[in-house]
Image (cartoon, rainbow, N blue to C red; front, side, top):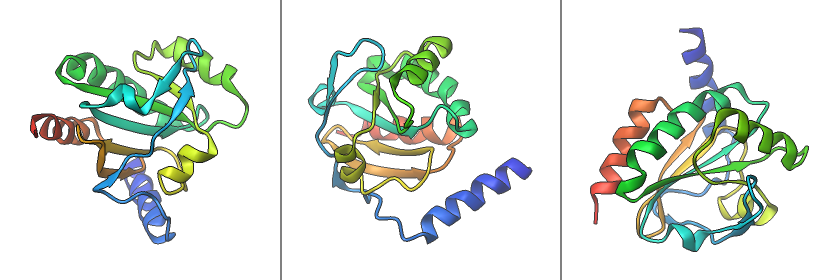
Length: 164
């Protein structure tokens, strides 16, 4: 119960902070960044005609780490239906700690390191975790400041996957 109140308070603070975070129904910014796992380029074009959950996270963030098993499950169960997760690390310590987390938790979706252009393109990220749900047309349709329960994500994703 305390955890839920803390997450709700954090979300409220993010909303009240006047953050310029990208609003729903705006085009997702384009990007081309190396994968943490193998340094191959991950491009925004790779996700054309897919529903995409973009999650900004940090390795030191407990709610971020708590979301990872849900993201792995969603990627496994909905990946064949035109859905993908994209993890975007805001860690300042470099790629090694992020790569270690990817390997330890067996993340099955692409993970990249955020750059200034991507952070700015999403309107600035004032806290983690912060996630965006992008439809098949490449438009942001949902914004999630803070931890999001699995059932909420799954319902939102399934609804957007069904849309044409």
